[in-house]
Length: 147
Length: 147
DNA sequence: TTGCGTGCAAAGGTTTTGCATGGCA
DNA sequence: TGCCATGCAAAACCTTTGCACGCAA
Image 1 (tube, rainbow over the protein chains, first blue to last red):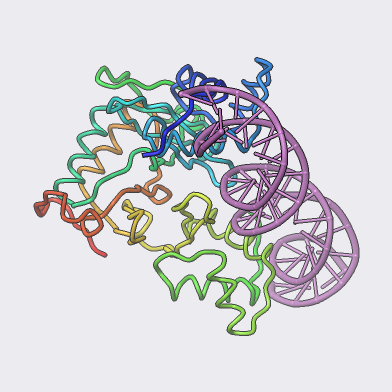
Image 2 (spheres, rainbow over the protein chains, first blue to last red):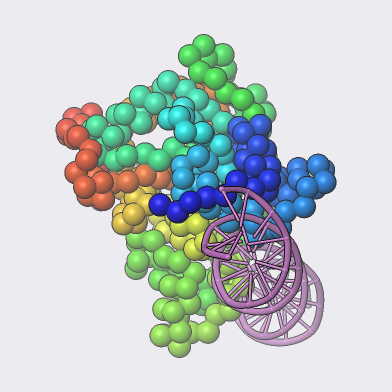
């Protein structure tokens, strides 16, 4: 096991990831650090994120196509994994924690012998605003969704 | 609606995609065309694939991270109606028609105001063979899955 | 002091874009 | 003939890597 130094660069990156528990891109990190007048090179960010990911404290996801990867802090706890809905019209990304999806995950695992990686999976479709209100709707009390 | 020309470049690309129904990368296409002494520029391939995807006859998937995207021919057939599971280890694509997934689709639509496009959605994860048999399994009598 | 971490710049790869030309209808 | 498609090259990105220096332990 390699020993590891604690540097202010890594702390700054990790702090930012902790504060923004949803999705963070490389450019988000760069922008945030610039605002705080902290200078960290891109290479350092990539190396830090690679290390964090291999340690399991952050998760990497590839959402778009040309766009870069996104990262999410998950801590050392077994995080409540959620799914992502992506609107193919407006491009909005919706984070969704939902019991129904969890049971779907279990169903697929038990009966179809397939272990879903929710972090990598993006469900495509059309959001309510882009559907011109054509979707009947009701709030779901079992689920939490946030932008 | 834009009209569309049929050119030998597009036919060649589409033919190759049809022959290799699993997944095909840009470099696969380039290599194949080179072997057949067909000269097509990279830009044309990207533009053709983008068009094919928007028409729904092929599907794009991002499997690795640094590696480029892969494409798969799905035709105009029933592949748009069911979901696809993609193993991130062996690359196998599993077609899945399942009542559970249909009810999930309804749930998301009714209660989360999001209309899922199953044809565009690829669910990523690990298949049973790549999981070293760690997945407990039982056949699902409500569902149909085929390779 | 030791050796990992960082910054810088260059390189590598993938994907996009502008513009003139080619080719289908 | 009228457009759309193509080729070429440049550009725009995203990410990685080599090397010398800085800095934590």
